[in-house]
Image 1: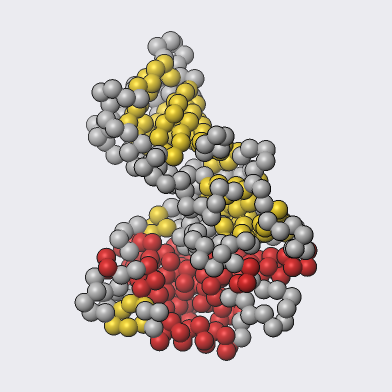
Image 2: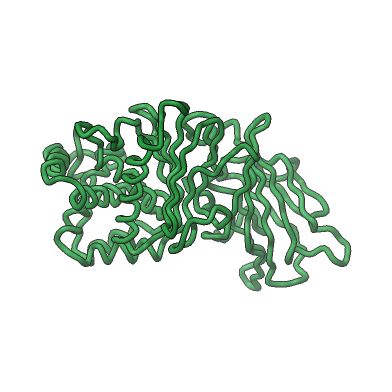
Length: 413
């Protein structure tokens, strides 16, 4: 999940547009007695004397307001004549109260109509993916501001176990701006953070006595190898803190991003007879780049992003495991691709859509160096942003990859 993808602030009219933009955002997470999000943003206005009413639109946000405060706010209208999910901010009328360089703080909870973010359990806490937009009129489309500097504060007993830096390059900085943040409590933590490397690993488990430094080391090395490979090949090396939830079950929900929810049996161990699931883990790590760091818009967007992660996972598996293991993986997927001329895209499941595209992209990576260059350029240009589906498909096509139409091929287990 992305920490922040929608916090847009704009005011004005089409003829004489003046804007108010957020220059930074700080997110604070609490969960006593219920999960609450506090987002504080510093505003900058094109006109220093701008004090017109602002509307906060929660319509497309999974959060609902509990309180709105700010040093320039005189009154807040949360209900009454306002449209559902919209509140109005009126500035104070004194001579020094303007939106420029003022702070607005939104205190919010998750809507009862929207489930709490998809967590393994209440020990993991995600920052919200979307915050409300703020504009001059409820009927206007607020300008979206992406890639804002965002920092996260947790309670003293919560630790930032997973995060994806909003910047490419450099070491991971816990207090730096993040695209995604996962906090955790109650679990025992093993942290691996070698000097001068951008990737940190946090292994989380309930069993303090059953896991030792020796058992953690192969797991940390495995995930770091995958992340370093992908960063090198894509020429995109974000600072990462990757959380490994070691107590996950076989069918734990998979997350796009810095929290890996695979069971312990998938990872490497010191047992020479143990076979880890290298491809499956590499695909999960690749979702940090495509799925979390970069997303794709459009009906097929999530499946195209997953297809890229699938192809990157295959590329790592081919380069880093035995030929026999890799051939088994690839043969399995090729053998289960079937023609489906009558299937509409809307009726196909995620795997049925993702695998055909993933194999097409992987074949391109093997055949043409230009496909690696294409993915590298897309990753750097759209890090922390959403790439339109047509741009992604067009650039892949120019590099020599025709993304398979979901209506022509599907994957059947």
